[in-house]
Each structure stands twice: as C-alpha cells, then as structure tokens.
Image 1 (spheres, rainbow, N blue to C red):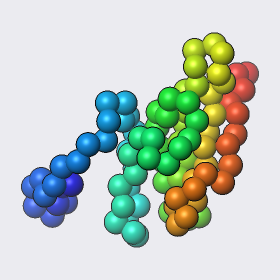
Image 2: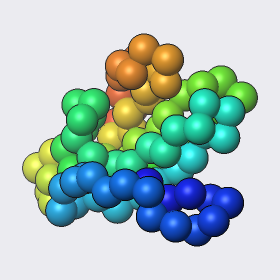
Image 3: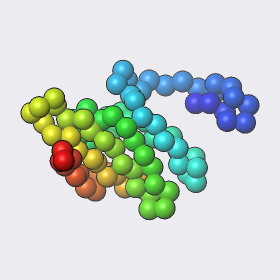
Length: 90
C-alpha cells in the first residue's frame, strides 16, 4: 500500500505472479488488481472500475485456441460476478 500524499510504502502484500491490470475506486478508496481472489474467467488480464455504476470489468484471455476470451462483470459492493460475456473475434 502506498500513501498517495507522501509517496511512501505503508504496507506490502502478495498478489501472485500473474497480476497485470489495476484500477482505483476513488470514492471507496479501493485498489482493484487482477488476481483470482474473486473467481472470474480463465487467465484474467486487465481490470477497469466504472464509478458511475460500481461495476468492475475484468478481461479474461482464455486458453490459446480452446477456451474463448471473456469479460467478467463484477458488482463491487457484493464482490460477485454478475455477468460473463464471451468475446467474439470480428
């Protein structure tokens, strides 16, 4: 954890070796990191928080050719997946 006012490290914690994307909820003062603490699709990659509706969107890479990519939609209040949308290549 980094104090944004002083730019000093206040605490550290493990987020795993595959963490890639992060986004910040300024209202709740929460940082969302792409890890598998909330089960989403295969190989989560990036995360975006929408402060207007409180949803967290996680892109999941899937498996090379066998498992399609998806986007997981998470309710930030309940910390649960409310929808999973399959990504289709155009």
